[in-house]
Length: 111
Image (cartoon, rainbow, N blue to C red; front, side):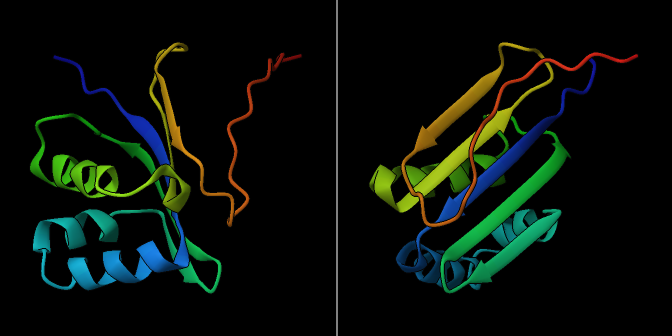
Protein backbone atom coordinates (compact mmCIF):
# COMPACT_ATOMS: atom_id res chain seq x y z
CA UNK A 1 0.00 0.00 0.00
CA UNK A 2 1.32 3.42 -0.94
CA UNK A 3 1.31 6.18 1.61
CA UNK A 4 -1.31 8.80 0.90
CA UNK A 5 -0.86 12.31 2.26
CA UNK A 6 -3.19 15.22 2.88
CA UNK A 7 -2.99 18.88 3.79
CA UNK A 8 -5.26 19.92 6.66
CA UNK A 9 -6.16 23.38 7.96
CA UNK A 10 -8.36 23.88 11.00
CA UNK A 11 -9.41 27.15 12.60
CA UNK A 12 -11.27 27.45 15.89
CA UNK A 13 -13.10 30.27 17.62
CA UNK A 14 -11.51 31.73 20.75
CA UNK A 15 -14.04 29.85 22.92
CA UNK A 16 -13.33 26.52 21.25
CA UNK A 17 -9.58 27.23 21.37
CA UNK A 18 -9.75 27.50 25.17
CA UNK A 19 -11.63 24.20 25.43
CA UNK A 20 -9.25 22.47 22.99
CA UNK A 21 -6.08 23.67 24.69
CA UNK A 22 -7.39 22.48 28.08
CA UNK A 23 -8.14 19.09 26.50
CA UNK A 24 -4.72 18.55 24.91
CA UNK A 25 -3.01 19.19 28.24
CA UNK A 26 -4.53 15.87 29.37
CA UNK A 27 -4.62 13.97 26.06
CA UNK A 28 -1.11 12.93 25.02
CA UNK A 29 -1.95 11.52 21.58
CA UNK A 30 -3.86 14.66 20.61
CA UNK A 31 -1.03 16.81 21.96
CA UNK A 32 1.44 14.83 19.82
CA UNK A 33 -0.79 15.34 16.79
CA UNK A 34 -0.77 19.11 17.38
CA UNK A 35 3.01 19.08 17.91
CA UNK A 36 3.38 17.56 14.43
CA UNK A 37 1.56 20.51 12.83
CA UNK A 38 3.58 22.89 10.67
CA UNK A 39 1.54 25.77 12.13
CA UNK A 40 -0.06 25.85 15.56
CA UNK A 41 -0.87 29.48 16.22
CA UNK A 42 -3.27 30.61 18.94
CA UNK A 43 -4.25 34.30 18.93
CA UNK A 44 -7.03 36.54 20.19
CA UNK A 45 -8.94 35.68 16.96
CA UNK A 46 -8.79 31.94 17.69
CA UNK A 47 -6.54 29.04 16.70
CA UNK A 48 -4.97 28.18 13.36
CA UNK A 49 -3.58 24.67 12.84
CA UNK A 50 -2.02 23.41 9.61
CA UNK A 51 -0.61 20.01 8.78
CA UNK A 52 1.24 19.50 5.50
CA UNK A 53 1.83 16.08 3.95
CA UNK A 54 0.28 14.16 6.82
CA UNK A 55 -1.26 10.70 6.80
CA UNK A 56 -4.83 11.55 7.83
CA UNK A 57 -6.89 8.36 7.99
CA UNK A 58 -10.03 7.33 9.84
CA UNK A 59 -9.07 4.59 12.25
CA UNK A 60 -5.93 6.34 13.52
CA UNK A 61 -6.69 7.12 17.15
CA UNK A 62 -5.40 10.73 17.21
CA UNK A 63 -7.26 11.58 13.99
CA UNK A 64 -10.48 9.98 15.21
CA UNK A 65 -10.18 11.75 18.57
CA UNK A 66 -9.58 15.10 16.88
CA UNK A 67 -12.51 14.70 14.48
CA UNK A 68 -14.79 13.52 17.31
CA UNK A 69 -13.82 16.62 19.27
CA UNK A 70 -14.79 18.92 16.38
CA UNK A 71 -18.07 17.08 15.79
CA UNK A 72 -19.16 17.92 19.34
CA UNK A 73 -19.45 21.63 18.51
CA UNK A 74 -21.49 23.80 16.17
CA UNK A 75 -20.04 24.60 12.76
CA UNK A 76 -19.86 28.31 13.64
CA UNK A 77 -17.08 27.41 16.12
CA UNK A 78 -14.58 25.96 13.59
CA UNK A 79 -13.55 25.49 9.98
CA UNK A 80 -11.97 22.26 8.69
CA UNK A 81 -10.41 21.83 5.24
CA UNK A 82 -8.65 18.67 4.06
CA UNK A 83 -7.14 18.29 0.60
CA UNK A 84 -5.95 14.84 -0.41
CA UNK A 85 -3.67 13.90 -3.28
CA UNK A 86 -6.52 13.18 -5.72
CA UNK A 87 -8.20 16.19 -7.34
CA UNK A 88 -11.65 15.18 -6.07
CA UNK A 89 -10.50 14.33 -2.52
CA UNK A 90 -11.55 17.46 -0.62
CA UNK A 91 -13.42 17.80 2.66
CA UNK A 92 -14.61 21.22 3.79
CA UNK A 93 -16.96 21.95 6.66
CA UNK A 94 -17.48 24.46 9.41
CA UNK A 95 -18.41 28.12 9.24
CA UNK A 96 -15.97 29.92 11.55
CA UNK A 97 -14.80 33.11 9.80
CA UNK A 98 -12.69 34.72 12.53
CA UNK A 99 -9.44 33.69 10.82
CA UNK A 100 -9.13 34.25 7.06
CA UNK A 101 -8.83 30.72 5.68
CA UNK A 102 -10.62 29.68 2.52
CA UNK A 103 -10.40 27.02 -0.16
CA UNK A 104 -9.56 28.35 -3.63
CA UNK A 105 -9.51 26.27 -6.80
CA UNK A 106 -7.37 27.38 -9.70
CA UNK A 107 -5.51 26.07 -12.71
CA UNK A 108 -1.75 26.52 -12.98
CA UNK A 109 0.26 26.16 -16.17
CA UNK A 110 3.99 25.47 -16.20
CA UNK A 111 5.66 27.43 -19.02
